[in-house]
Amino acid sequence: MKYKLLKSQKEFLEIPHNYSLDVAVYQGGYGSGKTFSGSLLGILLALKFPKIRGLVGAQTYTLVRDTTLQTYFEHFDNMGFVADEDYEWSSTLQKITFKNGSEILFRHFDEPNKLKSLNLGFVEIEEMSEVPYETFKMLLSRMRQRIRKEWKNFTYRIFAHTNPEFNRGWIYETFVNNPPPNYRLISAPTTQNIYLPKDYCDELKKLYDEEYYRVYVLAQNGTYDKGLVIKDFSDKNILDIKYNPLFDLHITCDFNVDPMCWIFAHKSEDKVFYFDEIAMENTTTSRACEEFLRRYPAHKGKIIINGDASGDNRSCMSEYTNYVIIKKKLLEYGYDAEIQIKPFNPPIKNRIAAFNAKIKNADGESNIFIDKKCEKLLYNIYNLCYIEGTSKIDLPSYQQIKQNKEKKFLMHPLDAASYLVDFYWPIKL
Image (tube, rainbow, N blue to C red; front, top):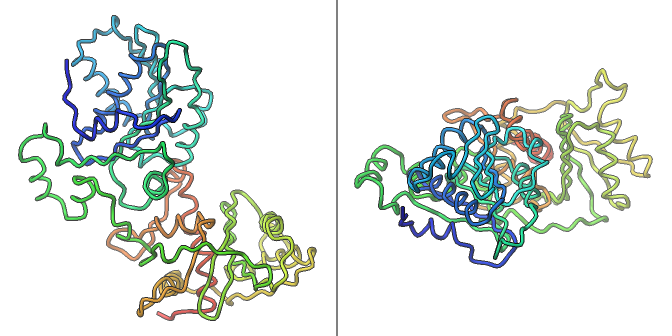
């Protein structure tokens, strides 16, 4: 059996560098051969490097079983492989074993901690846009199977296939915005697949709207602003902001316990400069204070506390309000902080309107600037959306957070940042 590969498929399979690890993403439209290419590469590695151990996974096992695994079996049939002679499939162990000793495990990533004991030679990821960044980083750490003497010109490989993203997620940041030299993104439009039915793409063009067709057929990334809560944010709003110990330092707070999010800023008469953030899980106000003091132990200017008005209420857990706790903690370091908050929180839509007006006003002026250290705040700006057709913010469910831990940081950092803007530059709707 001989395959005549598409240009993008050859680019995906071949390594153009000499690094010890290759990380490649095949980003394609419908019918562009994504899973075909990934499973073919997995088989080729298993045959070329005897006793290699590979892992094939997706966020859910249903996706692994019904899509990726079936494509492996299709390749075996095309290659004339015979079950129990050329390879063995164990449904109990969810593993393919080749007669040269190579193994490919098939797993879901819903519980990534269960994969931490594996030492691997390669990983294949199905629909990587659904996989959390933390899981991807964990899989990188598993690339440490001992290299055997007979493995000539061996390279550890992580390879993935996925549809383009509508929102600006971690794949864009990792593989497009600032990729390491051994990271590759291969774009594969559906229109380049000459093996599809003649009118396949034309029929899709009639079926989809322009934006959907551009993403899921032409394999182009989304415009990233469709349905976003924060509008008109651009690279002009991102600056390398230097903390100045002589300037007034604003701490603007959201007091959610998991996570608790504080943003640090300098402010002028009409501009705000967010230069750092705290986003801590399962914590307390006191611990967040300690983290602030660890980072900024010798501030000379004033410290001004802004944030959630409800933080001025006592809770059943403490005789003090959150703001009293902050003042007392800072006073131990000689800081006499000012509290500047509203008597009550305005509606969320007012805060968002105020924040958007500072991002870019009607005259095209930008008055909010954010340092890249504010990762969680930027994550909110790029990913927090309205539910389609409504003005209600699409907040993640418990199940979504369980599948993707990063989603727990949606809303809270933006809440913290917008409290400051709304206090000094409010908009009445």
